[in-house]
Image 1 (tube, rainbow, N blue to C red):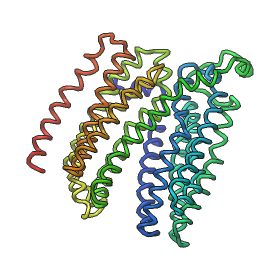
Image 2 (tube, helix red, strand yellow):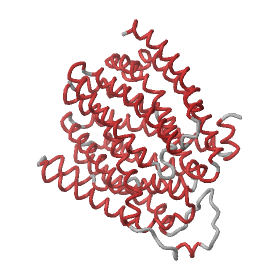
Image 3 (cartoon, one colour):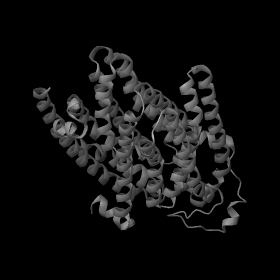
Image 4 (spheres, rainbow, N blue to C red):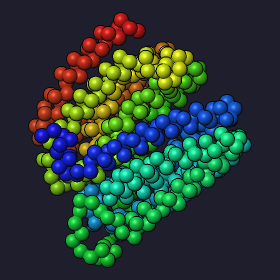
Length: 462
């Protein structure tokens, strides 16, 4: 029985849910791209730079506001079921503190930045920080209830409001501050739409899938809550893992921009954007759909989970190697069609970047098991060397070989993270029970064979 057939026996709505999840994620990527295309035509280059810098700063600060609470909720409710409500009170306090700290960081940044345009935008974008903190919790609630269509709609709203604002401004006229005010108001509206899901969680009215309520719901309130210290000790790896991931994903562009021209940054950004769209397939499957189920299965039926995990790895391998070959073969045709002939160099960059695809697909698969039970801290400490390697290679290679230094950094980092996650799963999830061979053997030959062929072709192409 294949991996998908096994899942279908557990949830007959798999195909519909995944269709909405993948469609919404893909649509989010398209909307984000179109939004940027419209923006560059509405405001000046300098104003666009100010807006991009302000949004990047807000996205970094927003990881503090979210503090990994959404992912943590998936874990504790997956493990403990209805008993996980004992974490809610301290989580609520930590969330409020993290949002206040994030807002404090904004004011501190304004104090040291002394750029009036950036300062005004950062003030307007405080609502975006609050939205990110709230939306991560509302996403988790919908995942726990397995309301994946609603989850998809909320995901789309979180990106779509910017597109709607920019589209309106396209017809009525725009400047930097109109965009800032529009984004702020749009975020506020999405906050209001997200509140009902938050209230369901705090009022213990969620419909928790996969767990039977063995007592009256009112009895849950009488149980002793976790302390702030206990909650923080379990929560911090989720928060800092998110920050580490954000640094890794943005360091290439930031360091490339410091050492090279805006043109080269644009070339690399187009190639990496294409990769980001491709990565939506495994991330949506594992992190949005399967993650709540994985937390349940590892507690209730670990053997079934391991069997599904092995099948999933084989599917990820076949799909990722196929996508890599397609991207490698057709980049020079597709990139000029989608982005224009001036981005032909991006196609060559994407051809080489495609070697990272199988490693990312498999890293997502293995990483999905490293957020279960008490292994999240292990995953965070595995991420740290990956992030450090990424930054070190960028700093040492980009000054000498430019854009290819960023490409090498990306591929090596994905490989390192995959290997570290594989070791971590074997050691801390499977407890070294002799299953390592079963994990590695099906992966090794196809990867080595495919890479050998493509590297030989690449030698004659570039």
